[in-house]
Amino acid sequence: MSSLETLQIDAADGVVTVTLNRPGAKNALSPQMADELTAALRALRADEAVRAIVLAGAGGDFCAGGDVKGMGSGGPRSPEQRRALMRRYRELTLALTGLDKPLVGALDGVAYGAGLSIALTADLVLVSRRVRCAMVFHRIGLVPDCGAWYTLPRVVGLQRAKELIYSAREFGADEALRMGLALEVLAPEQLLPRAQALARSLADGPALAFSLSKQALNASLQSDLTAMLDLEAAAQAIAGGSEYNADALRRFAAREPARLRWPAAPSSSANEA
Image (cartoon, rainbow, N blue to C red; front, side, top):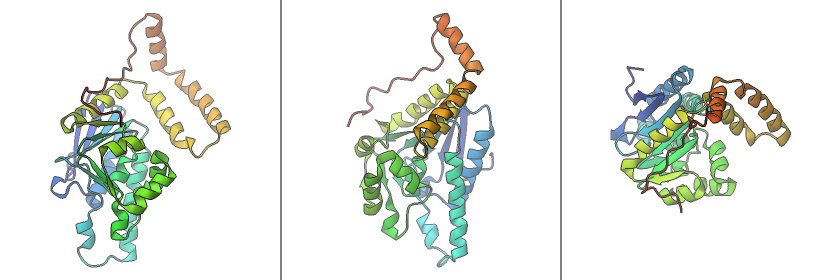
């Protein structure tokens, strides 16, 4: 991944920070960025040394959505060209949702359109006080992509998802928190350090149990209770045989601190609407 042009990849202590890096375009999602991000995510999933991932944007913005300037250049696109672009977005969405490792989104500045859609695939979403979010697709006569028809109703509920998509309106940090789209609101300078702190905490936790829980939670809204109980029993049998579980039981018996320790929120974060 050393030749990436639209991303910056930084790794430390099992945590990889993937930064969308087209600040001059507010990190708009170009076809090249979509391809590079898809490839990076697949590589990170396969790398056992990677325990958690942070997704952020460079230059004070997360992602302005699809590259609208690029869409308008070169004349109208043929149906074949549009299908090729949507295949890119499909592969990117599957790479994001297929991660079996914790993914923390750090949203600053604008998170519009496909940028917001990408953020909705994160397990935990943190936003800065100055974040501006919008499902802007209807403004230019398009429909949501990167899986937002699927993810947004599951995060904010069906009626609110319809309102956000139909209106294409902008909303800020406090409303994102109230809707359950954001877990925490932070000062801009605290955003990335907090996201990385949460990711480090998760990286110290049980990778196998996280993977099993993430897969089960993602399946839960398409399953019934009986199916989930069957999945629970199978997953518990697997998790109960892990080295992490054995070490945790030993720590408990010896009255040693647990390895998984959730860091307290910074004092200036706003976690109440």
